[in-house]
Length: 154
Image (cartoon, rainbow, N blue to C red; front, side):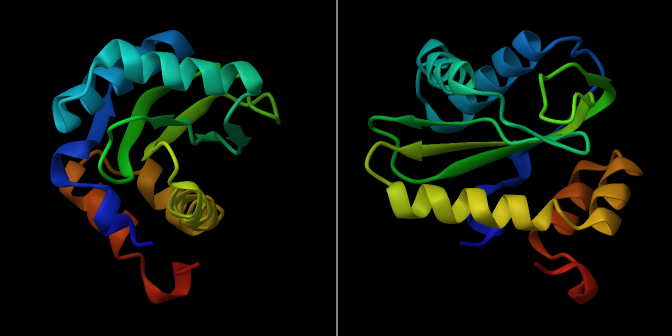
């Protein structure tokens, strides 16, 4: 599963106005609703339900909130770079500033897991994460995610 299949140009955000995990999940839900035509409250409920099971904050300032939605045709993603890190209940207690949200259709177990694994592997590459943190250009951010340099490929 390639990130180019999950992240369209409109699904890369740089946010300066997010101050909490709740605000972030709301913003992600609203953007996902715009991109998918699905209901923002339904998306927020799916993300919130998953977070209730345990934080999707992986550590090193990275989170991958995710959820499953009935009626969604394919796995979709949104990348967010926060100007200011926020509390996210991450496993290492560090604040989060790099976020990739994934939404999958109900019943898309393999595709959902492949997407999660691909994103997690990619974001374990410290040099790539540092490059992501150093730019605010949405086009460049997407390029770095979908076409990481060979040395960064996971």
